[in-house]
Length: 170
Image (cartoon, rainbow, N blue to C red; front, top):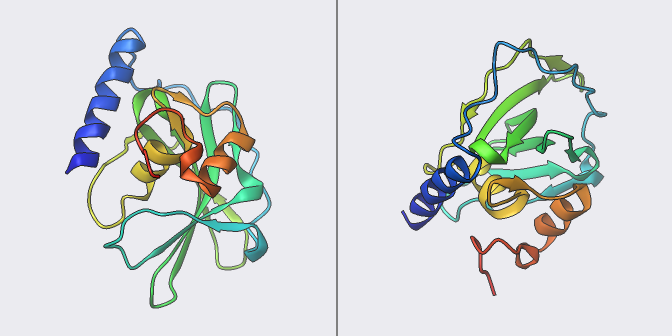
């Protein structure tokens, strides 16, 4: 519940600080996304999401990209205890606390690009709060993204690296 209140406060603060920014314009197609190589085991870095989730959440360290409009793009891997795996290429827009799925991984280790994917509100709560965890605890510093991929990687490796004060882990 405490994370939910922090997330709502972050979203409202970001909205006010940005001059009442709105959702990115969905009528404009995003620039052609260059998809990274499919993730390999040696590049996967686990990140903490929730003590109550049985799933494993990983980021492909070779895929992190902070793009000019301040979105953070990365490849996510979610593994269930039963062995099911979902691989997605996603963008997180810190200013509006939204994400979009740019591509979905196929079983043959190729990508299925999505046409004009919609921006969706990042939800805080539930067992699989991985996008909220990424935004709140790893790749967003208030309404802005981390400066570069190296900063995102540093936060994923050690959450104490963050300076925005949302996660004050010792």
